[in-house]
Image 1 (cartoon, rainbow, N blue to C red):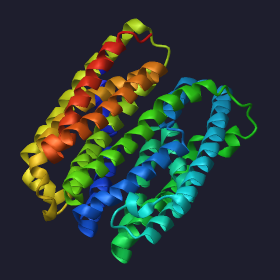
Image 2 (image 1 turned 180 degrees about the vertical axis):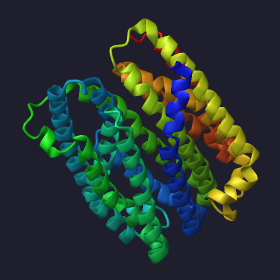
Image 3 (image 1 turned 120 degrees about the vertical axis):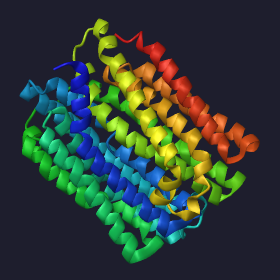
Length: 419
């Protein structure tokens, strides 16, 4: 099969899973927008970003590492079991450390200042509930990644559909019965059923304690290389968003910060749709022993198709923004329509960075990838803070577009050095 046809087959094949995940994200977002309003929507986003940091830390940011390393060793069952044993030991330690950090945050952090408008007792309870919830989230993440790495597409699809459906149902049930006060607790615990179901499904492709319990431990170095590359964006990205959101709330008010959060949520939908297909396509192909000379012929066509796909999606959202904003949020988010063009332009450019970043990650170019991520996030934070007094709430959006353009250009140059 031609490479282009194969690419679109993977995109369309994963389209069902991505469609369910996207639909669940849309429903969850709509429920939050209706239940909270713009100001609380921005405040709850602070908790969501903190939860995202904990979830990434609980798996050491290794979801892509599980895919890539499993795919590389699936032809050697003994080595694969040792690899899984090492990965699970690291995940267990990371989950315990992340849980402890959340407990300490619940007891010691200034929660009213971190989450404006949310009662401190609700925030404290949510953080305590999130501590065990992180382990279930890790189960869901690892199970999905292993099924991807093994190319067990039916199980991958079953896990990929079951997890968001259960998480969405959990959140909706809490929000409908408990209102806005129940939202933080729902977010903290929404992976309980999902993680359990994912682990049970993953056992059907051989990924269970029986598979690795008696195996000899593998070499931890490959895991640590992926951890370094994954944790930096996974931890730094949400932390930067939290800082910029606080600055926007103080400069323009939390209602305006809610509009900015709405634009960022549109970006989350783009990330979900585009990065899902890229992860399935790129990681198994460039993480193997592919000669450097073949990388351009593999990567460049995918880069072009990815940007075209993202640009078409951005244009569609822009053209329908009068319908999209009230459909995804509520009438109180109408001011978002004026902000969306800048955000959508940044999303289209960002898709190129996703594609090239995955290549650097799969090839384990740790220093290059981490350096690019740190510089990119710091540039966005500094540019946002500098532009807020000049452009108001549009400042972070201009910074987002500039950051992604520079990031994609830098990775395109760095890709020539990948071996």
